[in-house]
Amino acid sequence: MAISIFGEWTQGASHNRAGIEWQDHWRKIDYVKGVSIISVADGHGSDKCPYSAEGARLATRVFCNLMLEYYNSYDDLSTLETFLNREGDVRLARTIDLSWKEEVLSAQEREGRDIGLSEREIYTLYGTTLLGMMITEGFVFSLQIGDGDIVFADRENTGFLVDADRLLGVETHSLSSENAWKNAVTAVMNKEPDEGLPYMYMLSTDGFSNSFANRGAFLATCREYYEMIGKHGVKTIKEHLKGWLRETSELGCGDDITAVFAYVS
Amino acid sequence: MDAFEEIKTELKRPGAELANRPLHFFWVVDCSGSMFGEKMGTVNNAIQETVPEMQEAAEGNPNAQLLVRTLKFSSGASWVNPAPVKVEDFVWEDLTAIGVTDMGKAFDLLAQELTIPPMSDRALPPVIVLLSDGRPTDNYKPSLNRLLSLPWGKKAVRIAISIGQDADNDVLKEFTGSRDLVLQANNAAVLTKMIKWASTVASVVSAPASRPDLGSDEHEGDNNGLLMLDMDNIPDPGDIEVSDVW
Image (cartoon, rainbow over all chains, first blue to last red; front, side, top):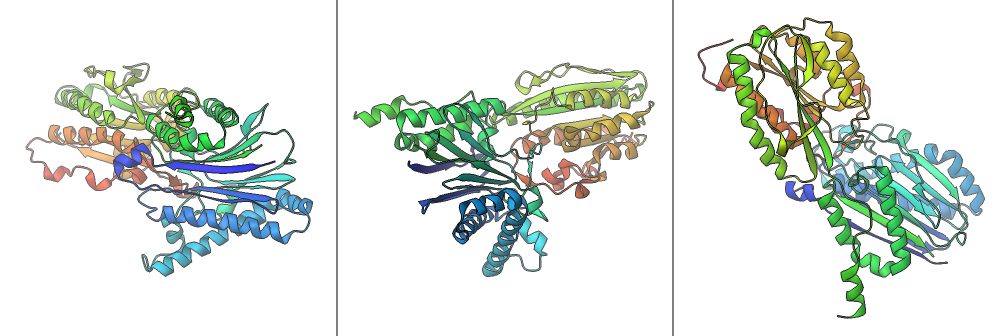
């Protein structure tokens, strides 16, 4: 079994026109000692969130570091799975929420920015969503705070791993909200790594799915990515990915797009 | 050309057809008898003049599909354009003034169109511009409450243009959720400016950044317009020299 994790991003076509910088960030810990970790964050990018690119960077770092810590602190994988099943959207999500906010306050102090603001106002400056995934040899854990998509595809099925609460328009749940952890949605899927090869996980910011007419069209697209990776190989798809995402943003919703794939074969 | 380059050239982007996001823009116009004459004429001229400007602004943003519609109300309410019209195909049809002010009936028709479906959940926040010079003659309240209880009713950018001194600004404020989004127009020159400003809101809403959800408590009496628009850009009636006042 081999896991290839790769991703790309593109600056949104409408953001380009408006001179707004890319606000997404993604990070991965490649397969080591039986675990891979991926996180993707989408900084809000509005005037009220001028440091959201940094907020996104901090969010991906917090998720990857914390998940690795959890993984290393459990001798028994099934105990970790039980914990994530029971406490993923409570204790773990709360720890992520608090850790991100600590990191934001440290960054704010370090940079000496906007003195005199309340903590809540500071968090808003760094507002971001968070998608995260931990792939182990017995299960896959997914977490989502805010918009974006986490998708699974194999030979037979394509579907969302996390059924997140979707807000209308341009609003999203955010790590910057008070008690952001209460908006976390998590899922644990039992999965033996060698079972049903090849299969694919994908984490993407909302600019990707918003570029299609509906959820069905987006899932059909994910399926085609899965099939094309199988047909042409990871290297070729990786070479094309940035151009495809750029085209998707230009002809779709115009938002930044980040998409990260974990292809297991 | 080596083998890899050959593959690279042939590979097309995977996936379904791409789609920009719809943005619904509603002109909701009071056509009661009190609008007869200069008021109605100014509304007709001003909106007609904004059409090419809206078309040009929309051309610059291919990632949103601006769809425009007009709803008129007087004795009853009806759609001038029953279906959404792409801004590039939109033609303003002059309205005439006669009858009473059944604003509640207009809210009922709006509510039908802001329900999902026919509205899409991936649309951009709709923009509703309500123009009125009087107070509702029907029981508008339940209809307005129904409109504002809809997910898209809440999220819409709601602007009111209050025409003349007899307009009921309290009702218009109930509609917008904020006094700041009730624009006062007491003469033809100011009304023209306010209509032109309102028409530019579509281009602001069509290229938005994400925004954290503030939670239901903070949304009380709120309007997306306050969060998305630069309120400093609203024309100041005091800057416009006029002699006649409605």
